[in-house]
Image (tube, rainbow, N blue to C red; front, side, top):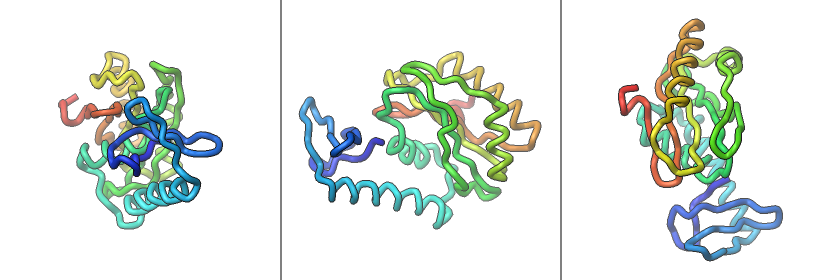
Length: 178
C-alpha cells in the first residue's frame, strides 16, 4: 500500500514489507518504525472514513485521483477497481475487483454488474493503475470502458468516470470527454 513519506514530506512511495515500511526516496531507503507504521495506517483509515462517514461527494476527478493515488499509484501490477456510489454520489464502498500483470488486468463486466447490484450502487467510478507510468488510455482501456458502460446501463447503474492512476498524474475519461 502506498503512503506519503513522513520523513521528507513528499509523495514518495512507501512499500509495506513484512517487518517494517521502507520508503523509496531518490534511491535511499528510509526505515519507518512500527509506531509510525501504525500512524500511517490510521491516517489511511481516517481518509477512508471521511469519504464514507462525512459523505464527501466524489464528483471531482481531482478528489478521486488524489484518493486513488494514495491507494494504488505504486503497485507493481495492474489492478482494476470500482468506487460504488449512492444517489448523491457518496462513497458506498471502494473495491479492487481484478488484479493482473505488470501491463494488463482482465475485467469481466458480469462481475462488475454483480458487485454493483450487491452494493445497491446507483453510479460507479472505475479506476485502474498503469504501473508503467504511461498516463494515456490505451485502445483496450477505451473498449473495456465501453463494454462496462453498456453492461451497467442494462441495470440502470450510471458510469461517472474511469480514472487511470499513474505515479505522478492521472487520466480521466470524463475530463477528456470519452
